[in-house]
Length: 397
Image (cartoon, rainbow, N blue to C red; front, side, top):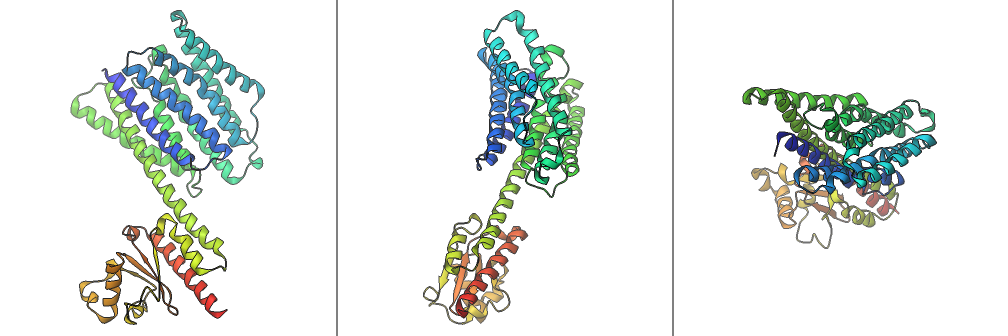
């Protein structure tokens, strides 16, 4: 297997992984805009997967399938842009994208050898025309017709076009012999990174671009170092660099998805507090038990705590939330904390939360990773305070 096939396949496979991570994130909410995103992602995955199979297997049909899928990429991009801009694209551009995809699909399935070079030029012309036109629509849009968050999404889509347009040209190496590795996979990974950051309004475009530049710079530095050690030529240096950058971007996308997931969990637990109102505190605690952050929490009342004496409650005089990790061996033997230590052992808990002293209500939680997340600790304190207030309100009625 040649170096060209290895590097092209690796970058394309990395792009597929990035798209699958993004798809998993978007598929959780079936909004009309997400449906447009999912259609575009499926088209890109089909194109990338078919071309990997075309390079690594002798089955010629995958070459045709690659061209067919690539012909639908401009149409998918146009459909997504219309959803983001909340307006129809000009009719000629729609006809161009739709008719171009149909013509390229027909010509690729006919599979006439003399038509092959012309088909590549036609595909490249279609992609560049539609992408440049979308860039124009993004720049000239009426910002007043969109919300601040919608304008943020469109701006980041436009930022991705700055990479997609030049990097897409490298996919046509058979026609131009321009570059030792097809770079569109890296542009797709950058698009995935941007798409995952749509809901992160606290990040500026410059911060995202700077992070990408840092990843790119680190990849280039690593590629040059490896090239110097191994005595590689310029072509292989570019290929090594592209592999490193694409691998780093997949890791960055995965970490971004994990961060986004944690932010969503925190947001939902705060939403539970906001929506609880002045209802039943027991129902409030039961609702929280279903939340991933506090799943498995045990709400313990007087009947459950009959094996513990009053010294257990005195352990909460200093703080309404007690942590097993903060109990030293000397403290575990003290009268006020001996019962608390037994409480942790009996219920296999890492945290104990005081909700009410009269009647006694405690919550036992097993959350060993909570100490590594200061934000989650703060939200747990908010839950404790809100639940305690609900019990006090109920007692005064």
